[in-house]
Image 1 (cartoon, helix red, strand yellow):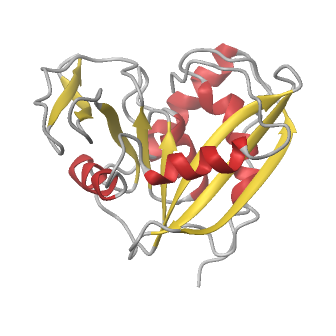
Image 2: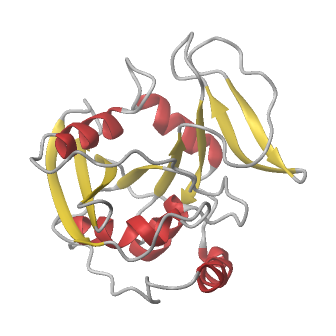
Length: 236
């Protein structure tokens, strides 16, 4: 049985934007973009918010049974915010608290669906890649809006998708999880391919636009007394 996630960070979190970009460029070569998954019995969603006018980062992780998408367990962690929001550097602001929450879960989830970008990122290293590389857990980026790249119109059918391309490279997919709603932006985080990522996201969206993982993590976080987080743009 896997043990809890207890990964000492290989780098500092309170860094300048230039230092953060250098770290992303160094770590992106560790991202695995082919299928390298264990049997998936649990899948987790992450919701991150901020308290005390952004001074405290709050992370909630909801672990669901993959078979029926029912809540299995959860964890919540708070810690001082290490970095202001900078587009493209979301992970340096949010990952420290997420790691604290994951460290409470023994065993860890088999798969992470991260509210943010993975490979669909200017430097191909969004928050889903960062979490996946640090923890070793397979991860998928599930963004609500595109951060970079272009795609053709997505047919108005559940399961329809179009590749998102940037500089000629396919970096993700615009996926329609429900007719008459905006597509989600799916990308590899770590240890799986894009088609596999799309299949897992579709399994986790049986009814609504957003995955059940994201919905339950948000519900857990917003149910806490201090869960009135400031609204922010999630750019990866």
